[in-house]
Amino acid sequence: MRSDLGTRTAGHASIARDGWFMTVLVLAALSPVVSYADAPKKLRGLCAVLHPSDDRIDWECRTLRGGESLERLFGERWVDVARFNRVDRRHAGLGVSIKVPKRVEDLAEFEPLPLVYPPAEGDAKFILIDLSEQFLGAYEYGALRFSLPITSGARADPDRTPTGEFRISAAHRRHQSSLYTIEGTERPYPMNYAFRFYINRAGVSYWIHGRDVPGYPASHGCIGLYDEPMQKEQYGVPRDPELNDAKRLFEWVLGNETQDDRLILLFQGPRMHIIGRPPGVSPLKLRHR
Image (cartoon, rainbow, N blue to C red; front, side):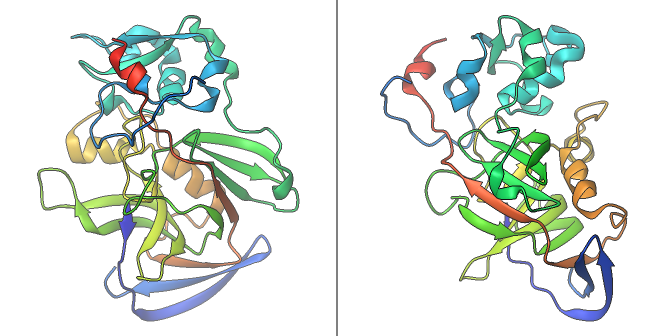
């Protein structure tokens, strides 16, 4: 989700941490050859969204029925299945088709990103985002520390996620959109645990932040991560929030500097690479029910 939130400086303090500097600013405003189409804004057939690593797992397509949930079907493995489908529990409900591994235990070793990323070998902290895989990797000196499913923007403008080399330039624990609202309300869309990585020529900012993760590219250009506490607050589900990948990444980058609700400017923040192209929808898979 993009934000063009303007900032005015009311005061500042300099902080040094782990070899790079932060300035805290108080905001006055706070396979087969087929044709692929962009994923629609609301897609219920996640089996049609194909990632390069899907072929590593033997899976079949299943449509969720009444009374079924990821927890009821897969027990303690539900997180692995959600991760494989790049979907949150709110979007894995009645009528939604998901990829179900024939051996769910195979997901224990599933990792779509490289375990070693040579361009990051000189960086204490480095972020790789593969749009084709819809995954984010957190690297320490080139070694993968952890990876997280994402939702990105679409394949084309105006909702395309920029690709290339970037650097995290700001952090904001309680950010919110100045352009978009919670569906059916006038409440600004929360963008909790946000990291800004790009500002385009029009002054529009692109962030990594917590949001809904529906299983396909659905943002307006930002990178979205699991934030179940936000979903519980806004929609009332899930009943017992567990996943908060946005917070996990935030704490990994900032360490102890995570309780400040002001905008934090990061000078020499972690470098980022965004590569690949978002997956489209395979019409062959859409017809396979």
